[in-house]
Amino acid sequence: MPKICFKYLLPLALLLCLLVSCRTQKDEPPFYERLRGVAPVKPALPYEQQVRYDELFAEAARQKQLEHYDAMFRLLREALRIDPNASEALFELGRLQTERMAYSDSLLRREGDSLLARAVKLAPHNRYYKQIYGQHLVSTGRVAEALPLFEQVAAERPTPENYSRLVQLYEMRKDYPAAIRALNQIERLDGPSEEISLEKFRLYSETDNTELAYKSIEDLCAAFPLDLRYRVLLGDLYEQSGHHEMALNTYRDVLAAEPDNSYAQLSLLAYYKAAEADSLYMDLLQRVVFSPGTQTDTRVEALRGFAQDNLQNGGDTTVVVQLFDRVMQMPQDNRDVAMLYLSYMVTTGMAEQKQAELAWRILEIEPDYSPARFLLLGMAGSENYEETALKVCRDGQKYDPAEPAFYYFEAVTEYGLNKNKEAIAALRRGEPYVDESKDPETSSNYFALLGDILHEEGQAQEAFTAYDNALKYNSANLLCLNNYAYFLSLANLRLDDAEAMSKRTVDHEPNNATYLDTYAWILYQQKRYEQAYEIIERCIACADSSGTGDATLYEHAGDINYRAGRRTAANNYWRRASRQAKTPAERRRINQKVRRRRL
Image 1 (tube, rainbow, N blue to C red):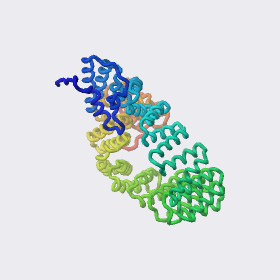
Image 2 (image 1 turned 120 degrees about the horizontal axis):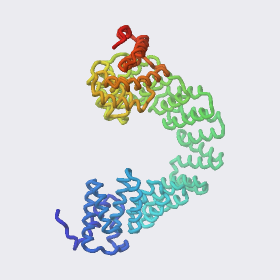
Image 3 (image 1 turned 90 degrees about the vertical axis):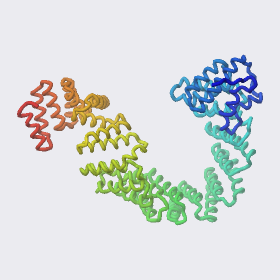
Image 4 (image 1 turned 30 degrees about the vertical axis):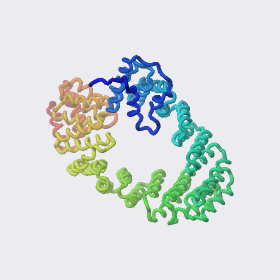
């Protein structure tokens, strides 16, 4: 690439930063101030060094555009060896280390932090540097250090945006008077607004400055006389300040003008509850929740307050249930009331049958609401569960076809009914959607189940492919590792792979008799009889202590003991296996070993 002569040009580093690094910012470009001569003047570099520095910085800027951050890192390092006080190179390198590389190296993060600080110090009038460094400080929890930088930015360029950032930072520090002063600055620049008045009201309330809180709300009431929300806020302020009668009159005035005003209804409900005016509270509650003119969100909030109060005070749940049941007989705009009722049911431990009925009602209101279907699938002990689960899954596939869980649970149900072919068909239908699942563990279990059923159907190679897919999503799926390893050993295939997979399960759960049995059997298949003997003895001890021994395990123990030269022990294990055999054919096969005393 031909070199560029810089003799009659501005330093290329400055031009590139002007064009590349700062175009996306609303503020002035970061190096524009330096071009105007407001930054401290640095000692000039010798000509050849300046040329080399500019070349390096230009190439670093190009690599940044290409997102080649490692190359950018090296180039900026070399540029700073030529000019250690180049604020633009310090800034770009500091930003690179804190934003792009810090996740992998805490030392780089600390160094990047100091580089940004140096850049700000060397170019104290560069607002862009201060903003970026300030944002970094905030993101690392150092709000107190960031505040002076943003205060300087706001003083140099007093805009609503800059003061809004200060409001947020002051609130994070709980410095409410300073936040109010910043809001006043925004008001001077942009004029009064509803949002600013409300925020000032909230902050005055935080500082217990009741007088100014009153004034901010009264100003809103005067500015927006038709918006009764502010009258309700004024009533709330009266109530918080202990002026209960004034609060009550304010709420009643609002409701006289607008009977279905949700803000006044909810505030008056809270007022009656605090005053322990139970009859008035219940009368208003019923008017709110049963009025056709009540918005759903208001109805939900009124019911939530009643239900929470009932839970906290250990009240009679029957009263709450009766109220919800009556509300649910009304037309429902959305699922919100039903979901609140369902949450109450779960919290109070109501019967699953009642929960299931409500879940079905939710699906009538909103058929594509998958969480209600998952709730029904979770009720494994309910009556006619298999029939319910199949309907839930098949309906779910219609409304949410890309959700793998519906295919998975359909397959689980079919498998439990010994309908293996139907289970495989369900899993195959859902297979294209598994990649879209955000849960690797669920995806792994999906393919592991497919592998188990395929193997049971005699499709060993297809099963092994399914196991490979399962481990791709979750390489630590222990049950999949165990089954995959065991079936490989039964086929006498890839025994080294099988041994490695099985060992992982035993390392993770050293007292799991099933995993130990698999591992011992693989060692047996590898003709490592003494090692197999040691593992199977551990397995038998674990199985006997937990009562999980079965015919297969004891038969394996007999075979391994026989090959290890322990013939009497082998015969004893075969006898135990025969007693636990599940089928006559299995018992006859094991008894042949007992009679012959050999494999």
